[in-house]
Amino acid sequence: PNECGLDFESFEIEQPAASCDELILNGDAGETIAGGSIEHWRHEAGGVQVAEDGADGSMYSLLSINTDPGGKYYALSQYLDTRCMIEGSKYSFRALVKLTNQDDTLFQCNVGAWSSDPASCPAAILVSMHGLTDWDAEWPRAGAMTESDKEWNVMEGTFTVSAFDSEAGTVALRISGAPAGVNFQIDQVSITPVEETEAPTTPPTPAPIPSNLPPLHQLSADYTQESVSFEGDAVIFSSSTGQDATILTSIAFPDNVEIMVEYLGRDIFGSRYQAGLALFFAAENEALEAVTTDDNGFASFESISVASIRDRMYPIINHVWFHMKNQGVDGSIVHSSGESDYQMMTGGKFKLSRSNGYVSAYHYYNGGWAQIDHSQELPDLYKTAPVKVGMRIKREWNSEYFLKVLPVITDTA
Image 1 (cartoon, helix red, strand yellow):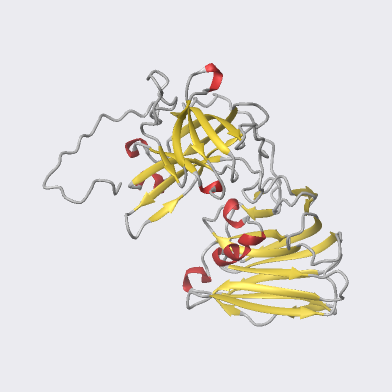
Image 2 (cartoon, one colour):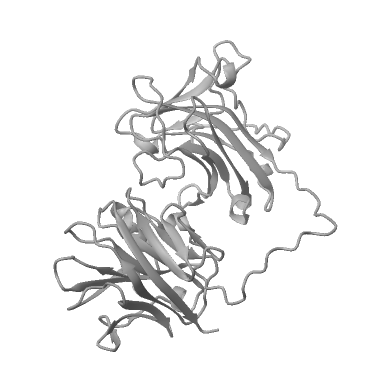
């Protein structure tokens, strides 16, 4: 796209027959061509070249030179045949990946870590775009590394073509995310259809899910598995290595909805500001990855949330601060705040509510609920639209935290 030059009196479009049995072209770096080939592959931010070092004893692979400060923006990508992007179709992605430092020693990434981790692993995404100038895009995950302790490691995953993907003008596979200074090589890249198997005549009976299962439960919500755990109906946020933590309902709630939490336990680490808890409402289509950021990205999280409220505590001061952000009717982000003369420890409670198109926040003080600042009107888009409900940690740049809370969600139904 956009590489055709300036002047064309006429031209003919050559349209080859569609072949959807394998979406990747030249996934082996031109193994049968002398010297290899980078044909069909593009680089973003860095460069792409053939390396005379392939997986499983093969001759060639594709190499992205990833020097400082390029980092995780460096990518290898390939446009896919949009004629194969049929809504509901399922595809399997697989590639072999090799990571090396600038001195050619192997680099081992942290499998399963979020992108905020300096040693997180590369991943594969689809980039589906509508339009050329006033464009819109989605970036669903296609695959992730499942290991990193070998010379060549598996990156794999499956994805289902969405309605957005099927109507996109361009769809590309992008592999990126290696830390700054870490080169990455790919080989045996493949995207193939997933063959649907017929359902058995007598399907197995699934284990029953209790009808009163809370919406923020391990069986009914999305959450960061490294840093969120459960104890009955309680949710535990904990880390000793600086992991970010979020839990988000898999269902959305229309009209009036409220989330209230009570602290069941909170450990203190050091004498600086402690990691705090944020309650939030998110648009129905938001995914866990979008609302999970490190502290540097917290403002971005607040800007895409419908509304959020968080507590802040300094351990040597008998005080608590609250900060609320919400989408304003004029398109801005509205900031409200409050404070009180106690610490948000075991037994402390606060909540976030949407009622009749307004959001409000409260904390429990002296035997009753006290409002934090004023109620704020939401834009028409979010007054009654279904929203997901979530909780997440703002680490305040701490690597350690432990918070145990009991969440309760109530809605119009």
